Image 1: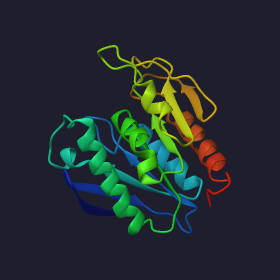
Image 2: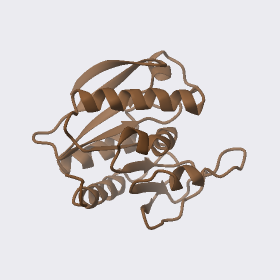
Image 3: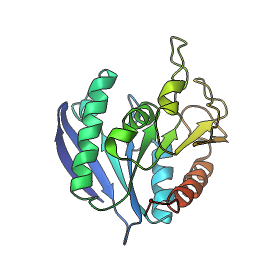
Length: 203
């Protein structure tokens, strides 16, 4: 694993690069709002990606690198994320198809920026469908513009999204933390990666 730092409009981000030999693609993943890249579901997704021949970049957003737990507003998160993916696409991940994603807040960022970053798919781990205010975030999922996988705990307090023509939803045992069955998370991610990466234009 290599760790690099990247300058973004919001400050310095930190990226943990987990490479594989002869990668088919790269998966860039972000953490939850107050969490870290060591979250159990992110670890499971990384393992599944490696098994599928996909390299992984685990991204720490600038506010977390700076020691803050509360994220900035969406435009700032999205700007930093877009800059990070651009840097990676031009540097260590150059020439590879890029998938993006993350858990919770990180999944929302990836959906909102999928088209802008050129992602060919988005992995959403524990997508927080319903905000604490009760407002739906369905529009973020629907607006991704690329194939999406949602892996959601059956008891997630923020709800469970519905599948669509471009969105697969896999419900696993557990809640929003997705800690109960990392094996199920890994299997869902592996199956989806294999499916997305054989699609026309993915290679």
